Length: 93
Image 1 (cartoon, one colour):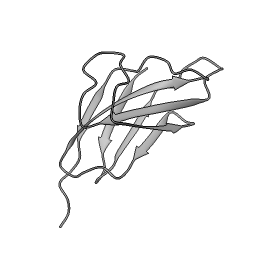
Image 2 (cartoon, one colour):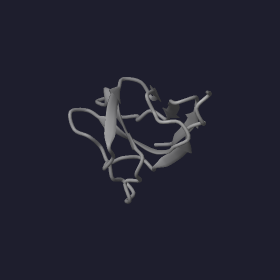
Image 3 (cartoon, one colour):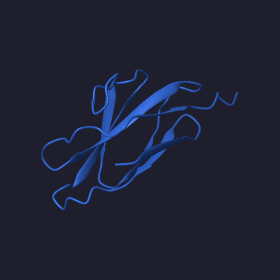
Image 4 (cartoon, one colour):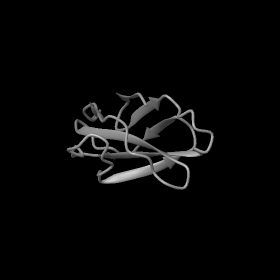
């Protein structure tokens, strides 16, 4: 699974390659201000579930590094993808 994150304001847009397994019907995007610290780990502060291989995470703090990882879901979570990080832009005040 390939992931990438692009900062867009106090949000981040992510896209990844879909899993070829037909039993996968959702993806969990795991994220937070701390790295999971281990490849394949889904140990992050927050997560959201999406049904397509992309997501826009909103409500992020400006000028902050966030770490993201994705797991496939078919009733059970897969191991998480490689971690990516991005820094959100400073606030526009």
